[in-house]
Length: 61
Image (cartoon, rainbow, N blue to C red; front, side, top):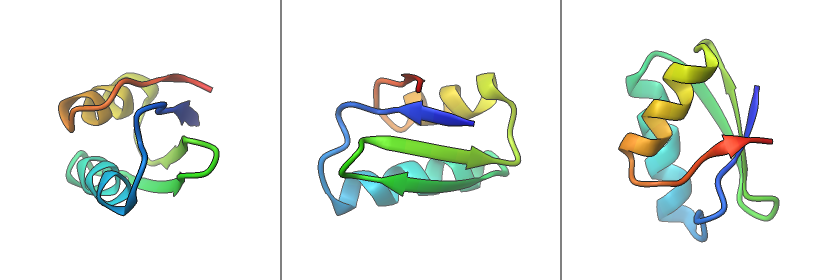
């Protein structure tokens, strides 16, 4: 599934989101230019909660 994360702006943001998803048990592919995160291995709620816990706003893309 893919999420829009509008406040990701840099490599640190990318790393933080990837780490949050990994800690929750999934895998994230981040596209900073599009401000999207594609997540595998987690359900939508758990993935969104992990991104929020990392400090980012998130919505389904």
